[in-house]
Image (cartoon, rainbow over all chains, first blue to last red):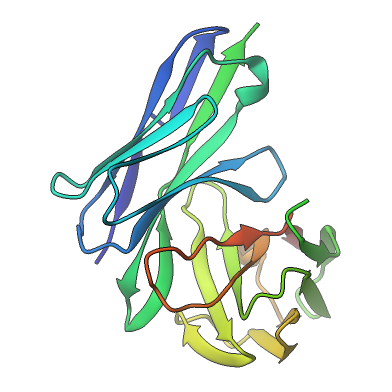
Length: 115
Length: 116
């Protein structure tokens, strides 16, 4: 059974700092690893998707890496801004429960960037 | 805007009420999903539809009844819910459910449900 864990549960940093969010998963047989952002009371916004054959993906100030062998992914945010404050979720997609395309989510890391 | 809309955004209902949640996607996708997000728990997949056929039901109680009349619309019919069913219900869509490695899901804003 796939389990996704995110550490830390909450993080507070001053503006301008570079930071790393961690995600680990127990079953390395994944199709891809996805990072999402969720603002309070809102839905999810997809940030980056790393396919199982890839090592990393970049979008602007965001860089996500994937190490299947160790069951880890990291989301690197450069030069953090107050607007980055949100909950960041990672999710592993695989063949779970007899069905393809199931996303298994972590509980998220709540990020607060102080001006 | 992700191209996935949900109505209503907020819903308060009694345990004996019957209500429905609606989701619509404008992305031309073939797959649609219902998720439940409870406080302090990870997002949980409830139902998956592909081309209007249900392909996954994650042991969800029968008081939740999904309906997918076409590939653009998805409903979640609710009846005789319990207070512990209070949560944020999220709808998502993707091009399809086949896992070719790239299957990005796009989420709606969710419906905040409170059961009294």
